[in-house]
Length: 277
Image (cartoon, rainbow, N blue to C red; front, side):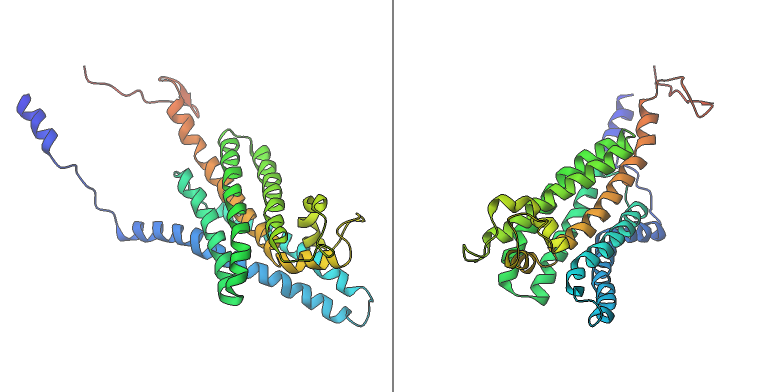
């Protein structure tokens, strides 16, 4: 008995050979969520503005207020893209590793946002927008933790509303940072008391009848934040879809583990393990 126990202690664990097809499938599932899905999000974001231009172009000489429709139309198309990305996230999610899933749906968004400014803009804009991206995606990760808990508990509707409202709140804070750090004269700078509406001003090009922002202040807010609010929309939708679906997929396994011995599951008796005496 002692010799047998010693042989078990020093024996190498048996390793099962994993088929190449299984490895490739797992690699594709990771790549499509971390690389392909963010690329699709950026493509849909660009497509939203292209669609807006296709509609605004013919109206240039027809309506005197066609410029006022630019951002509302872009926001409308971006919301449609967000719905598609939320459904894509639900289909391309990964269950079984909650922490890794949170990193997979937040880090790529930050990286793609910074990379876009590094390639198409300048270093100054990277330094201006990167802190806002960091605040948004870190805050989104914290919101997604609560979303995952609600989804695992079977409270799907509460999980979605928590994610939507939480993402809007974090995006509202993130939009404030570049505006507050911008080099704007005190006369043209929007009043700090109006900061909670800057996100919605950037999305709609409207001051909502408030004393601030108005006129040039609305233009300054949109000029500073650029496409940040739209980027927050698409990546938050993708992350929310992936986390809610991934967390709900883990619920049945957890319930099977928690089921008492001898209890029936789906009409069939559970198998009670026999422990050695």
